[in-house]
Image (cartoon, rainbow, N blue to C red; front, side, top):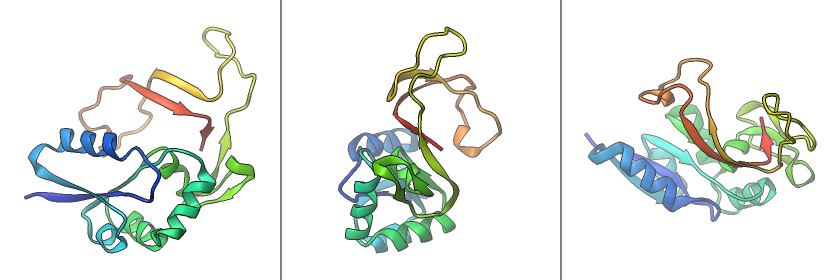
Length: 162
């Protein structure tokens, strides 16, 4: 049975790369639909909330496209994945853009990585924003990790963390 995945389009996001990745891993078992229609988001079996850019712009765009209620409902009802700014927006607030209120669906806030920190292994200064390939350590089991080996390398581009 084909399941529909809604990729939320609010005018900011890496929509093509997210869509292609979902189609690749889902094979013929998923139908990926990029949408700005709140009804499609609410009715989807799964939702991906991507993003790139700044938190303030993200929140303005969500309100402008009237997607806040649809995202809030989907987050509580179906498997849901926030990516980059889409993940940041799920929290109460972010330091980005001088302080931006988020959707408040997850407890906590998003902070900028501190300048001048040192890598514990090498002693070298860490750059902010962080860009590059890093190994990820799985600290607890989660279905998202199914089929992914511990210490797999992922590419990161970010200056903020939860």
